[in-house]
Length: 189
Image: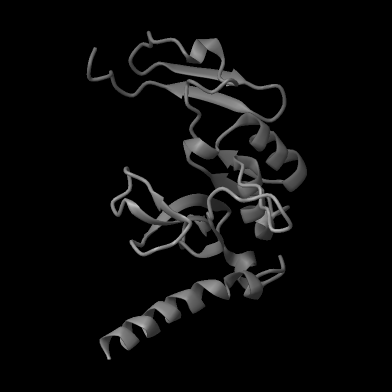
């Protein structure tokens, strides 16, 4: 009896999320007109310890084991626009899906293309090529953190000596702006 109850609860959760793209697939839906201009691209780990070929181990997450999900959510209401399960390395063939950073973001943002919104992403999904592509081809802007070891980071941003509360701007070649701010000193200094 208890297993059936758990199964029903799980199915309700799946049904709530699975009908989202089909209900709101057009850009003229009432919800999309009233939702916020800022969206977020999340990387979630749904706890799962069972057998599954695409179960992931991410040590920095609380559950550590689970199914990795990429989601596009509204920043104000946390409404989920679109989701995609990361299925791991894909074999070549008719069902191959490219899981590169740029392609994952482009697949997830399909529902909000050409809507002049801003997308907030984490550092693993931030790069200059993606930012320029989203601005020019999809009419979306992107805000994210760029690590110092990325090749597109200028040398003046990579310097170890930065003054406290220093602010450094760098305008890119077209639609990009880099900003460096030092709010506090490192612990080991």
